[in-house]
Image 1 (cartoon, rainbow over the protein chains, first blue to last red):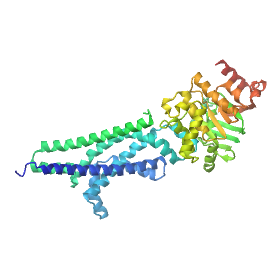
Image 2: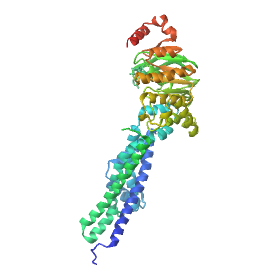
Image 3: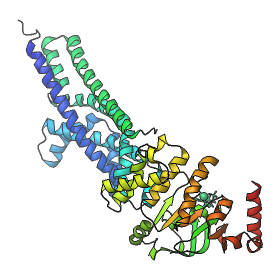
Image 4: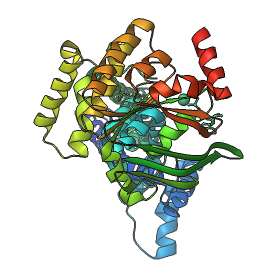
Length: 223
Length: 243
Ligand SMILES: Nc1ncnc2c1ncn2[C@@H]1O[C@H](COP(=O)(O)OP(=O)(O)OP(=O)(O)O)[C@@H](O)[C@H]1O
Ligand SMILES: [Mg+2]
């Protein structure tokens, strides 16, 4: 067996890379969901100052390239704050912030999609703003948001591949290594692309299932 | 008692309510009549605190609706039924009715839902209790809307043209429920264009014209020479009867 040949171990390597990509994707999605939702709630309550701050930060994150944000966190932060940032930390911070900004936008429009008249009804019966958010707005806003959210997540999955440039051993980085060793780019990148594709399909499928369940449960024919 | 004194409300430059004084005592059914745009809906929305008032004072059993701390107490005492039902589309009829009792009155879910079912039963919706609003007819939706208001055991019911989005058959099914409520002594502020029905259930008629209360009379007086002596009332009644 020559050095440039594929070995069974390469499969393991690819799967490990996939695992790293998935772990990053899932963790930054969860963090992003949490932060983005909190931001949307801040806006719902019209908290002065904080609300403007959130809008400003979200705008910055949405309108600059993720790669630039990644470099800023990985190279810029250590230089500026004299702290150490590992590639994984930089990746988690950047991707979480980026997801949060887009999830915030989706959450805000989902909250606004719920009809004013029902909210007025709930207010008249004495529900607090928090009770209205939890019992009236959130269930409908979630059903509304699943579609756009699925689209966003499929995109964010692809975006994780950017972190390979700072040395995180994700699926793309593994592809890079295998490619350099075997010099069979067509085979390697086809395999890598296929793995991304299948994962994206899985996300879409899960989103559609979840949406269907939410809507069946609510029988809400909105939109 | 709902007590309104010197109420003023404007939207921008337009004065919609211009100095209203009105009292609604326990057990009364007061119909609010007036042509379109006279401020009837705005009056209701001021009483339940959906609109901020510009001047004057509204109290419900002594609780001032323009004071945030007292508004929640005032709101516990009045229930609103809306023209377009305003049901929560993601909840079944029972859940719609039980929501406020659970969240606001802190009733246990089981009890709140049992009471909701009983209310729905009383308006003939036993079979439809677990249906979602999208699966109900307009008349059925409005009956759920009435149950939702009654579930809070309010001292006062505020009703704003609750039948105007319904066809005649559904209208009569909702009106007969309201007539029954009036008989049992439920206090109501009833905004309507159903003149004959208003006449049959009201103890008093309040007539709004361009944001002013130009008549506040016992029902039969309103429909007799006393009311007719007011040109705007006479004009309104003859126009309504023609339609
Ligand atoms: N939110 C608002 N902003 C601006 N103007 C408003 C608003 N709500 C009501 N108005 C105006 O106030 C006036 C009174 O409206 P209101 O809805 O109280 O009338 P109404 O007596 O209920 O009429 P209708 O019989 O047609 O329901 C109208 O001229 C209306 O255009
Ligand atoms: Mg009106």
